[in-house]
Image: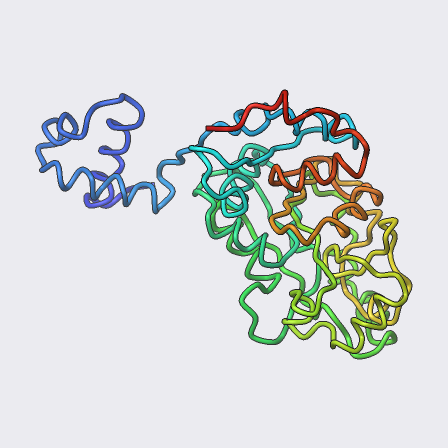
Length: 327
């Protein structure tokens, strides 16, 4: 690929600064440009994905609560944010940490399944640019027709853009008006092929939603408040990939779920690496349900949520005495 002369200097500046460790004034001298120009070119290089600055997330994996959560719930890896000098707001830090974790987990050639919602979109929005090869990002559920800032297709395509990957959206609505329509649409060859392909994903990224009256399934118009109340009466406690689960993490047999176009839960659980990210304190009940349903293998949470999970499991013990804050 031939680069324009204007692009070449950006690449040269990035190479000298990031690969060879030259100072900005040394890069300026080597390229015979001003130091201000070097700073400008380095910023352009980051924005264009010419360079990918990644930071190790080991600091958040080494937290004592992370180790306890892995043992208590049989998880592969847990990352925990805790208030300290490094992290003044653990909740606000979750999307940034999760984006770094996700980038560490994505390998060349991976097929990645992505759900939707506020948390996933926040992760996509803060994610650094990475030049992965032969990666495909797949939407895990149908789409929303209404103007909504966290649509499934937006989450999928923004993450694909950050990874320099191919994006594959669902060409079907998330919710149909009748069960018969949903059954017929799932039988369409294109939709059936997309649904069947989810089980072949190598990695999944998602959060678990609540069934509160201000939750995203209500705000986006997928559920009415009346339907929500009826579903909660039937035992619904949370949402995975647009579908309602009960307290045991099982698919809730209700009219709403029967009208949904989304990944089969067994297909999701067959994905070998599944990253769950939880930002809000009010998600304890749906998160516990997701644990019982074996929906994820990796987890990013705040220390407050980690403590509540350990209390529920009776595995907290005297962890405060042994856990060092991140600073």
